[in-house]
Each structure stands twice: as structure tokens, then as C-alpha cells.
Image 1 (cartoon, rainbow, N blue to C red):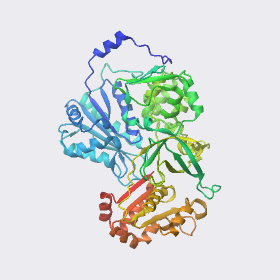
Image 2: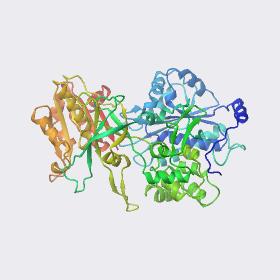
Image 3: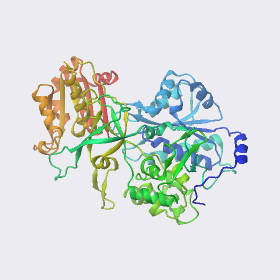
Length: 589
């Protein structure tokens, strides 16, 4: 297996290949993904099906819209095909960004009669609307006349999503595929799969390729200067980590609305970037151009090897077991190949967890330290590795008050890995805390303010106060007549009461009514949900006046807060508030 990345095109060969008729797709792998997990599953599953002689096609649901609906419905109604849908859920039971148009067509109901289908939902039981999209797609496909060939499956990321998926795959999916298409073909391919994305070394002035919708954010992110960057905690010497207030100066091309989300792309560590360049026998300054048969490429090109490994390839996240099985296809027979294949089996699960998952061995470390004998080209690595994912932060400033800058409120992640006893730091939060420039793009939020005459109830403990700060800036600037009521919580007033001066200034000027919970200061721990229960009469009063409720913070807090509100006003009222977008949550696990 050669490590060279130089591609020499044979015109006669290319012309002959162009005349070859594309084989008919047997299995469509549709993904609705927000963070790339379901896309990664589809890619690995596609490789598996190809190795058994089947013809799969991975499809971004972004491609299914009003203009292409009839075309896709005709394709998947082929009785000799199987359509598999891998659906993540976003926000409050909503489809992911790339699946919104598809879900809209599915709800309308036309064009799904006779479709052979299977659905796997990706979710997290910490969220109230666990796997809502997977359940909806599964139910709607059947009610619209589809034929469920594979039993519905769900993965729980709060426990072990990959284990749930592997169990569903082995027990439900593969037997159904074998029943429908028969056993492995004698012409099944083996060894290294053909790379979908091609690499041509050397820069090109232009390219006809377009962005892959699932990684379009890599084009959207722009360099921005960091202005102010200050510590928000009064005491960082105790067991509390740092929390930073960061002001990002935006170019004129970047606009945001109050409480939108900022997506931040952090670079990989320069040392692992250099090791990856050496792994594929390239200089950091070498440039290359991407192309693919679909006309779509995963990240901007031409670019340098340094840019590729710094910003576009995820080198720090541990690979999934299914991805290790795919990596084994690039290995020569021997110990490394056997080990990778064992990690991907049920019997090797404990070894995988102890050797890869617990010590948090990322792709970069795996390829440069543990799999040194695996001969990979730059093209191989680009096709193997997942894309770098952005980290999202709710913008903590008002676009009316600060139109040319966005403020970020960032808790810096750090700690000690219990498996290795080595310290670790969050890639993105550490980058934000230390850098003078950030790559940033804006993503719409579910948080939107009501009419100025309406009251708002804000529940935002810790860094969950970020969008509430933006709301208060906006409401004060607009001289809104509606009452502003804030429920804020932290550990101790003199330790992590962030934006204390601002909150107290708003409070003293009668711009906000604040209810504070300092969980570590009394004999019993008091949280924001306890304050809500205590102020249930106030909550009822404000809701009768048309108030909207905004909740931001951890998923457990969000659940406890919603439960407290249900006890105050009743479950039916909460359901209606949610349906009317008057109770909105932005939570993280």
C-alpha cells in the first residue's frame, strides 16, 4: 500500500469510467444530523454494505426539499430497494437543520407509499423530547403507506449510543438486509475501500465543487478579532474552573440577532497537526485541491495540509468501534489489523473502552502513536476522519446594543482523566480563553423575545445566564414595558456569581426582578427550581399576562425546572406553552 498522495489522471481511463453505467442503488442511507454522529454511522454502514457486494448510497437529507421531493420519492418506492433513516432530534423535539424540509414533506404524506424502510433514532434521555424525530419518522412512514422492513431502533447518548446502535444493527438490521437481498455476494469487495473524496496535490485557482451541506459551517466560519477577555469568577482558586467574558469584533459580513448562537471552530494542537502531516508524508505548507464524483467536497479547497489538520479534521475525538473496523480495511494483515477488528466486536468491547474510550484516545493519537504501521495517504485520512465540529455558545449580548461585536460567556473545561491521571483541557473553551482571534459563524437560536408589552420569565443559572443577559440588554434599550423576572443560581455569591455588578445595577434601576439561589451557602442546597416552586403564584400571574418562559443550562436543571412549573400550573398548560413557543429551552448534556 503506497503512502504517496500524488494522483496521475489517465484521460483514456477516465473517459472509459464515465461511460460505465452507475449500478442501481439497493440501500439508501439517509441521515438527519446536527453534530455528525448519524452521518458517521451512515458512512461506516455504507462501507460495510459495499464489502458485502451491495450497492448503498449515503444521502444528506438536506437534498430532500420541495424541488427534489418527487425524484426522491420515486427512487425509494422501488420495491427492490431499502431506505434506512438515521434521525437525530434537535432542541425541543425538532428536526435537525438538514432534515427540516424532509420532515415537512413526510408530514404532508404524499410520495411514501410502498417504501421499504427502517429507522434508527439518535437521542439522549436527559432531554424531555427523547428521540422525538426518530419516533415521528418511523410512525409517519408507516402511516403514509410504507413497509417497515427493519424494526425501529433507538440509541441513548446519555448511556452508550454506539452500543445501542451495534445491538440494533446485529440483531435487527443485518438479518433484515440478508432476508431482503440474500447472503454476501461472491463478488464482494475486500480490503481498502475506494475513496469518495479525491485529492490532487498542488493548488488550483478555481474549483467547480460545492460544499457538502453537512459541513457547510466550515465555509461560513470567518476569522474575528477578540477584544476584551476577562475572568468572570470572583474566586478561581477553589474548586471552580475559570469562566470568561469574551468580546468578539465582527466583520461587516457577519450579523446576528439577540440570543443567536455563535459557532466557534478551534484548531487542533500544533504538535499533533505536525505529526499527522508526517504520517501522510506531506509538508505542512503543501497545498491540495479536493474533488468528488458527487461534485461536493467536505471542506474548503484548495487549502494547505496545515489548514486541513488544524481546522477541518477531528483529531481529538475517540473513534467509534465501527470506525475502527473501517480503519482495519486500510491495514496489512498483522497485529494492528487484528486488534482493530477485535475492538469492533462484542468480545472486544471492554478492551476498546479501557484502551481507547476511557483514556480518550483521539484519531490523531491513534494514527500517529498506536497505529504507526498503518500506511495511509492524505486522501485516505480525509475520507476516514470525521469533520471538526463547532462548539456552540449562546451569544450573551444584544445586537441592538452591540451591533458590531458579539459577547461570549464561556466556562473553561479542565480536569484530570481518571483513567490516565493526566490533566485535560477542553479544546474549544481553552482556545477561546487564550486566543486573540477566533473562527466564528452565527447560527439561529430558538430564543426570540416576545412583544415589548409582554413579561418574560428567565431561568439561567451559571453560564445559562448568557442569553438572559442579551435579553435584558435588549429590553432595557427598547424600553420594554413588560416585566423582566430572572431566576439565577450559582454555588456561592462570592465565588461564581457572574455578571454580579450588571445584574445588581439592573435590579436597582427596577429593570429586572431577580430571585437568586446560592446552592452551597446554606445547610440545604437550594437551586432555581426550588425558587420557582416558592414563587409559583408569581409564575401563574405572569403567565396569565402572556409571559414567555426561557430556560438555559444543563439538561437535569431544565427537567427539574419544567417539573416545578408543571406542579405550579399543570402539565396541560406546559404542553400548550411549549406548542405556542412560549416555553423555550436551550439545554446541554
